[in-house]
Image (tube, rainbow, N blue to C red; front, side, top):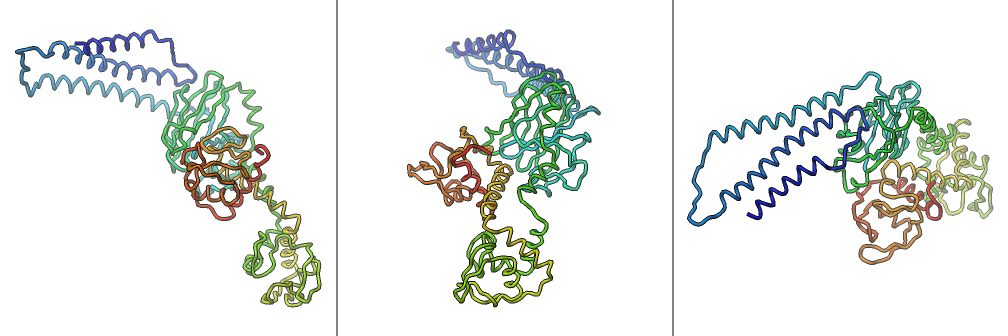
Length: 474
């Protein structure tokens, strides 16, 4: 009897709470009405079933409670009751599904004047693309994804050169303008969800899904991933700011275009056509098989820091490595051999233009190039961290995250899960990327996936982390 009273109390309390609760859904977007009507209908149908089933259980507990001398009547079948249950549940299920199909049809029927916004999901961060002055988004594909082009935009598509790129978890939209949200995923299944707007849809790798809405109320709205996408899923958050059209245009003008990001990437790489031609010649003639470009030891002298240095020759004399010496060493390598290296290089008969290109390459790797090369590695590491999604879990400003912050990490002493202490150096950083579960820092979950990177990429990430040892985020 007591349990029956509890069931009746639950029903009464639930109905009263729904009727008199002070919380109301916001009318933040144009599609709030149809979606909320569908949600209310769903709540009404499921609520009726909840009340009916709970009261039936209370009635059954009261009417059919155990009483001495009373036995239950055996009735294995009741066809009228079965037909009633089939009919009522069929109508209820149709009532749950049909309105959703109508709303979905409205959800994907985009107005002609809709403003396009592309959302790209990647573990565990968001990126956005908006049309530029031409009002159109350029084409994209996974085949064009690279460290310099993480969104995979077509570099040959003229209409995509002015596309605005937002590499971060915050995007802005103008109030009162219909927005078509195009969605892509760069890795696994995600779901773009803005609770206050009541808009959400799966982002399936290899497909472009879309929906639309018109933001009606200015303000800041949280963006969530509503599909489990890995261990850092809970941290995949963003922010959509709806503001006046004038403020939006001002913000949009401050964001880089795709062409600008490519130009900046090329500038960071310091590409010189003559140097690059020399690099191609060095590859073509097999020079890099014996002469390293990064300072490591090889069969012949390394080219990093070679130009302008003072070298000791096999006969004990010294020579300044300049343009004339380099050209002579290419045309007549046995004339003046550097001490400590075997006379194994063969002469090369190259045209003057090719000699100039090779000299330009070696000159670019001179002593002043050591610092430039380090700066380049740091820049490459930052770009790689953004592309791989490292910054979704590791902050650059010391703030807590899924993993340890990179600010001040390099050179610090960290305590591991087993109580041991370790110095964060190049070897530890490299192992933490390749085998992150090997030495997990105490206080952090072992959630980081292993990355298969080449030596250059590992050096670049290590250089970027080391650069944050005693300074803030760049």
